[in-house]
Image (cartoon, rainbow, N blue to C red; front, side, top):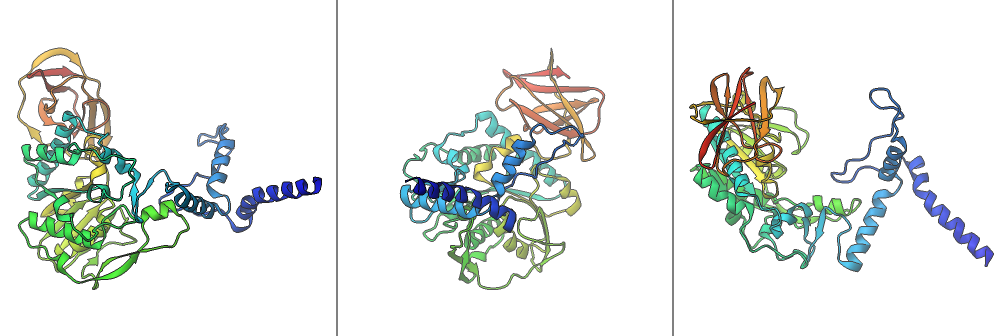
Length: 440
């Protein structure tokens, strides 16, 4: 019995030591998908002082890099899926018939992240200010939303997650966009098809879905879009959600792929569709395009690059609107995925505010705390207000010149304004139907 116990002891010890031995012999494990690995530990901090957390940093480093880590994670995920039909990755939802969903879309699906009336108004107002800035430079503006995958394909979602039967943030925001005159195109109906226009194992639309979105955008501009009518062939794709769940997995899914080579050229160094900025030229007849986009633009930028003679695709967030002055576009297009609509309230664009008419207001004697910093050659003024009407703009007077602030930022009822440096700053807002003035 002692001999058997000794064998199990050494076997257990060997199994425990194997990942560390693999780390020393084979080198550290690579990151999987979008994973960010812990940095190598250091005995000192940047200021030269001793790093009290060096042992914790070492533990995190080894935990992320021990040998066979990704293989063991993949094995655990496959066993969990096979035995319990559950996802072993917090970021991935395991649906039926091979469908995977991004967990960050669950609040939209269940309706647990409803924006307030103020937030909806502020999101639309932010877009209106971007539209005004684009039009001031002679460009059209168009906003569009890429639907969450489970908004289009709810049937394969896990049964334990009930779908909300109330209007979602995108449905509610459209009401405000229309009320405030913001040009937008709704892709939901366009993308509702029998054939899948999203990947089963990825969070994004496929090439055919991107072609449909391209055509809807052109039609909203009064042009004819025919990208979805072109011939597609069958290709393969390794989904981002699949890679998150099974880091060393190699199973691909079939998907539609355009059956010809693209006809645009890159005018700046290009590495991948994930680049922060992509610049193109083509024989397209639609002039110049500046597109602010997220990862859904990875498939969408190519058909748009063919339609516009010159294009710049930016992944900057917050939006860097000085690109409008640099590129002088005929169209400013802003695409945002449904799950991130709250960014319109929390990520104010870097936008030089335009002067506006003065506001007649009552002096309250109240004060507002402002954060003032220099950014992009402008002065950024940001703060928040305790009480104001849900549909009230916020104006700042900078040495007597009035500007409308973007109603976005941090805190309750935030505002942000990029403008000239000023010695005297006052804030104006409406509360209870009355315009009030606050000092800073």
